[in-house]
Image 1 (spheres, helix red, strand yellow):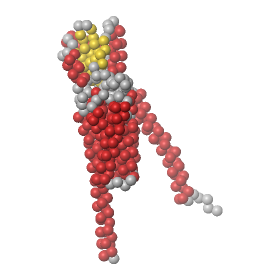
Image 2 (cartoon, one colour):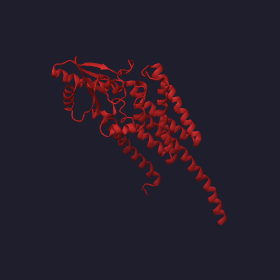
Image 3 (cartoon, helix red, strand yellow):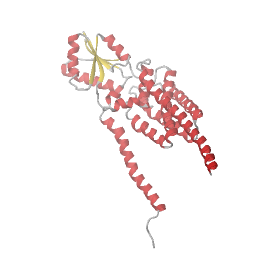
Image 4 (cartoon, rainbow, N blue to C red):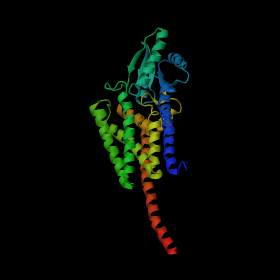
Length: 337
């Protein structure tokens, strides 16, 4: 009696082995992507200003430079110039030497984690020197979200909404202009709903309502268009590829919970090239800084959206050309026969 496995019995066994191997690999990738940046969070060339008399700020610079590679020092003539640089998002904070003593300017709206880190570092040095440091939060986070938890928590839902929209449009068979309109319309509605929740209901975003809604919508469109665009060109595998990039790289590399300069190199930089990181940076700019430093992340999201929608149209055109070529080839074959 022949007991050798047949192709029909070998296929399920191979699928079972693939699942057993693939799931631990995906778990390892997820742990690496999320846990590694969190475990290595520390300032790396974090932009920090110093202002005051020349001799005094030279001493402050020397003290800060003891934290090798932690800070990128920017000099300013006075406190007003340092405050302006913070409002423009050039620096996260500033140490100002005044006749009354040293003063630390922070911007918890840019990153509560960075503001706390700066305060701890300066307070430790002041305690060693026997001086007191007054801390002023120049651009404060929302009193309803002092730790920025709600803002950073918005990254994952927007990414999921974008992935879901792109996948649904693809699975429903929408193509070409119809797919583009569906993606744009869905993103617009997500933006309106997100702004209504975060701004109007929770009160964690104090900026311009429409600018925040546009940011939420553009962030969603950047992801959904990329998902649908890759699927139009690569098939269903494009959905998985884009979802993996956004979820396993974009979210943990976004710096939403801290700041891009707090993540290991080059994670912080890469994260700002992806929709979750660019969307978070843009949302902070329009919500707390009157749009300062918004051009870069806005262009990043626009490029993702434009390239994704372009890929949707291109994929539809290529499939249409292939469908029209098939009958022609069949007629030519019939004539030859």
